[in-house]
Length: 165
Image 1: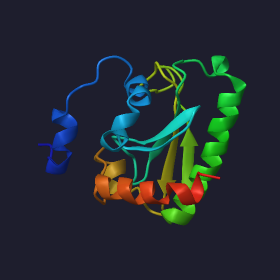
Image 2: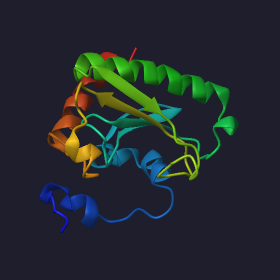
Image 3: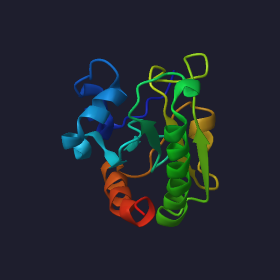
């Protein structure tokens, strides 16, 4: 018999209204709902949004406003801007969130493991020593150790210190 781990605080993720079309284009075009969509930052090229299904607390994504599934078609200036935001984002996670390491990655295409393959995005995942344990490794279950909304508010309060020049 398989054990069940209940996480009632995730109920809103399951019962929340589904967004039609590209979720990232929806977020890009709804600046007036940044807090509800958990947007940390936005500028003319990109926006940063908390991952709704994070690997670790503080996991966020850098997403270009340009809708494309091909990194090779992304304008170079946007790619360079994403890279600059990634550098600043790593500093935010290390200094502001006390991460001991950071995984950065892009899964391009369904075959590359992208959950949302139609719109490229870059993940920044803060890591701590021993943050993966038996429940992640053996039970294929992830434990999120703190309240998602608290982490969002903390990171949002730090953005101006790390991302805005």
